[in-house]
Image 1 (cartoon, helix red, strand yellow):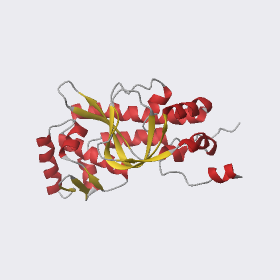
Image 2 (cartoon, one colour):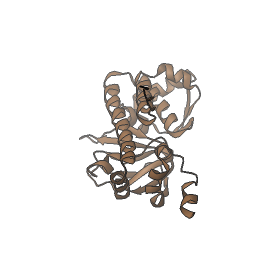
Image 3 (tube, one colour):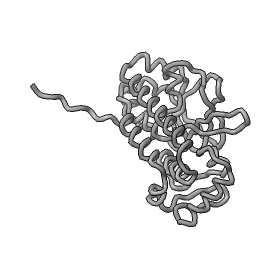
Image 4 (cartoon, helix red, strand yellow):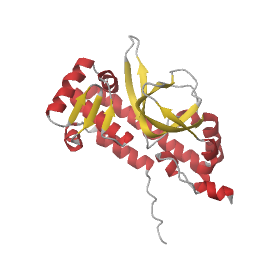
Length: 247
């Protein structure tokens, strides 16, 4: 009776958790803890062992690579629809990149070992974890091509829309440095582009705070990478069951 009551309790507002069956969710439910995601909090450094997975309810986690001259470039973002730690649970726990909090919020967290044990125990849990890992990989691939091919303006518009989707808010706390890191550009370029977007009334930017006034306008400015990544996430994270053919 107690187990049934626990299983029917409201789940944390995270896409990965909500997609699990009741049995799969019960594999990790007793081990979930809630933590604050504070701005610039470093969750793991490159080459360190990732010990905990994070499932945001609010806020956004940024995955970054560090270059030899000290620059940091973002390669992916994880928000309320997914999980950080899928690759570590499915394979080598050594972090391939650094991860830090881009947008503050709240997340569920659990030990990577607990996540790995659930994946080992349930094929459906493992399949869900794999789909979320593939979605992040698709985002990384698209970001590489985007940063190499598209204008600073279209890249910034794309990232702002992605953060809006991941965080569920039109009001973002973002410094020029953070925005430059997101799109692999210089701060002065970001400043000029943010001014252009503000003059077009797409955003309002002041003292590290960005408000998206016209998401549709931003969507017309953003490159095709925004729609491409969104379609990949929809396909991977919300798979539709194929109808069974009759005989």
